[in-house]
Image 1: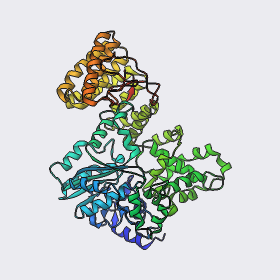
Image 2 (image 1 turned 60 degrees about the vertical axis):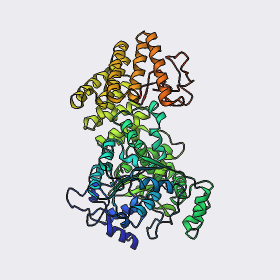
Image 3 (image 1 turned 135 degrees about the vertical axis):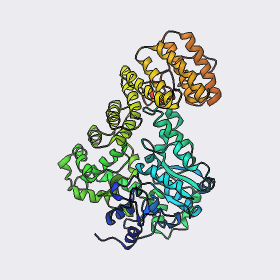
Length: 592
């Protein structure tokens, strides 16, 4: 297959180590060409899925002469032209200031807002001699951090940070080990889609399901360590004026004509056009099979799978989507033609699917936010679960739990636990209890607590988290008096280990009061809840979701033990919420 001279030049210069191991969610058309036209390197065990030169070296930042190598969506389907001119963003001074201080910097914005391009341009100008350490998969993260620690100066590049969170993902201790004592010499620069970041809002801690100390709370702590830069999707008047200086570029000129509806970077990446192409392809005689393939790829990502899927998987999993829309009546094209259509770089940019035959395919992330997408169907979810490994099953279980799809969560987490995924035993026990089997959850959590006590000690945060859940489900199983007593002990231990103002201490106090009321000691419950509310108002303020329950409660008014959900409650069937240690919905008086 012939390719352009520019692409050959890239293929001759760049590789990702042993390409046979796969390329992660940051893959672009550049890597597709590289993977198809280079032999996998086998330089030894050190050659993991990191961006490298063909000699196996980690590049310096100044060597990255194309933003696509940093994960920017290509703006020319043939890669025969340079990327569009960079237009300075209003957020750039804030980013420069943050990077000058070193540490961990996170750029948050909508898909195709221009996050990666701004990060690439600013970091390359500030750190030309720093090593550019980019893991291409989550499994390569540990090796990437080790490489960055060995370099005198390094930037750890985590494009699409959400793909590096979760089982085997980045942790606060990893960041501390890399950054501590190395101001200016070690930098972690990450990007994250707004839709993913919103999963970690403080309000979500009392609303989402399935987020425990090993998952949601650890991931939130990672985000809390970053200095965050927000990048708007729509461009300001000042940004448009700066873009006018580059009107000679046809891509910029076209984007400027649409700035009233879309962001300039969004148009350059052809997000709206690609979404429209997907929707229009369902028409009979066009590309309905291609649309079905894209739908399957989109739902793979929405199910929680963060890595590319194979061509064979897409071939096996797309037929039900086609059948739901009319099957043979749509006059579907052959599968080979469908794949070509889905992967071709339409509108001089990325395709609906990103990847290649050898590395697998991902749905273009802009499509994940298409309005009105229905829930992921059972046929896709079950087919996917039958194919994935333990770490992927854990991710799928966590996403299902957060969507209150508890039967799915239990299935996925049982598979993850059986395969040895870290933390799956804990989250499985919680999912079992939330599904309505609290006695089984108690038995499972007793085992978790026993193991964590032996390995970590009784007051380690992870042991405290498991004790919290054990006490909660003991109460849910009908022994409110034992639950109140267990939470009383937990209040003492969390206060000693974490401090009286820590969210887990406050959560344990909340549960202690609640189960005291459930056991019949309402006077004690009201007294404890009033004291807790006063402390929350002092520590968190009256507008914090944990200090302001639906309908509002003042410190001088009686505290109700039954408060119905607000109109925006995600889970009306489970209208009382568990404490902050779990951060998931179940049944207690108000968001804690």
